[in-house]
Length: 315
Image (cartoon, rainbow, N blue to C red):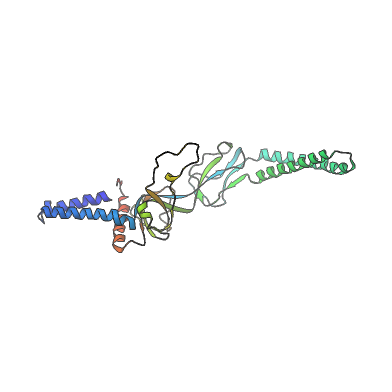
């Protein structure tokens, strides 16, 4: 945007002073026009950028959940297709429970036998006909088999995996008959659409003026010419550059200080402009210290960014 304004400014000077010669160019005009341009640049850097920051690196984010099974085994049925809307509670896929159903019947039979032996031990131990150690071992065996039965019953009852919320799975590579192991536990990635937000990168000099509730205007590349409205949720007051991981190595004598912080933004829903995870664009934040003039300048800029999205925008 700054490059376009600079080109337009130079073109206007040429039009007025050299092409149509409406005014006569001299050293005074040269100094004055250069000074005006420098003043506008300083206004952008020193004041405007701090009280009403324009973030050109902003992306739509949301919750992504790894969907996995309770146990390794074969997948029996798959009910979803990639990139198709899924409602909370809809069936995703079904695991084959043959192994656990057989194990459940086996452990139930063993438990019945163990309980009968435990009753014998409880009757014979007080009389001295059976050692107390046998009573302890048989009690422990019954408790162990009860746990095995409960585990097998739980896996049989939870063979059907359902959607945790409204959303979709961008990639579905599983199909019936595929074996799902526990080395790679993730069966699919689920993108939640109940709540999406924008994260924008803002310089440290400007982030200090941003407060929760500040009004926001956004121009996403996905929707050229459209302005979306929203508000600031909060500032993410942590940057990974400052993090020192636990290690036996001594810390280095240099650090990489962060130049920016991230601001979390909530956009108002717009029926014909749904948000998509990963969509990018520009946002402008109107802080409480921005005057009417500064807000007007930023409104012109963000709308220019929106219309530039109709074409390839290298700026």
